[in-house]
Image (cartoon, rainbow, N blue to C red; front, side, top):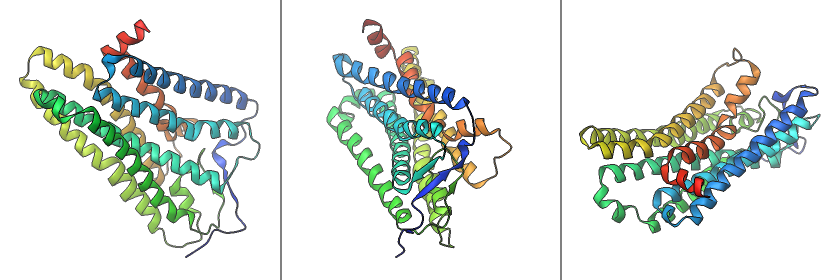
Length: 306
């Protein structure tokens, strides 16, 4: 078993570069974004909690999604703001590993939550008479708890292999710590852990498996809607549209991140590259409360009264 090098105690995040006085503008923008994410998600959580007619399974899943969005943005934005104002852009090994753990658990929980929400919509639209017996509040609470526990254990086990490595490099060409790049800095000549992280954890467990299940549920929903009444079609459209937007947005962001780890993306302007790489943590946490708050009629009406 290899041990951490006593010589390397921190990594350097080189993507920040020298931005001069623009750092104050970027800091203010990041702060506004972070406050907006916390406010928007917390507001919807409070409204769902206070309004009795929103104490339904779908809105419990939404609460979990909103909590995870706050968690995900917190994994990046406070560190991002510190690094923007910093002159050295160093991050200690300990905080780097904490950031990796937080980011990957956020992504895992987000995908799992969106997946189970797809099943909720499938049962609601395709099996409406059995919905209340299949999707109960108690079962939803248990599923949400399992999603968070499995994500934390899954990422914790994967990260434990990285923590045990000895590192010979210090430069991470990103604005935050990424497990794939930290593995590349190890003194080990084998890259098996890197491929396991990208292929098994990233591509199969996080993206492909949930996406296949989501596609299956929506094929079933579409099949039912083609034969259903206008009222059923309207209900399906109202509840599925924000979910589909959220899924497509998140899948695009995660797929880009996986591709960018293996291919040269320097043809994309640096600023745009940074935004795309951090999209799941910058844009998604603000997008979710906006689309669900504006599109779902019950939440929209509750917001107006509130």
